[in-house]
Structures are given as C-alpha cells and as structure tokens.
Length: 61
Image (cartoon, rainbow, N blue to C red; front, side):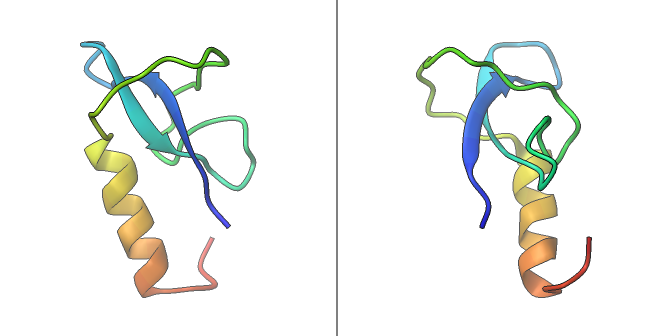
C-alpha cells in the first residue's frame, strides 16, 4: 500500500502531496518528506506519474 505525505515541490515553489516510496524515507520522485502536518491542494506530478506506472505494472520495484 502506498501513502501520501506533504513535502517540498521539486521546483522548490511550495508544498505538494507526494507518494511515499516503499522505503518510506522519501517520495517516489526522490524528494524528502516533511514531518509537519501542513496543508496543500497541489500534487507532485512526478510522483503521480510514477505511481500510475507502478499501478499499470504491479510487482515492479
């Protein structure tokens, strides 16, 4: 199961929702994650694209 957590956007322009990698230390896109409970309506497009690909091909790392 994957989860979503907030972290800094790869562009450095604010916060976005990231998909957490299976190692749980970083997002699928490689960005570090925040521990604070901030709010945002934006999503990391890199994470969402990687997550979509993972769902198309289950079992791939």
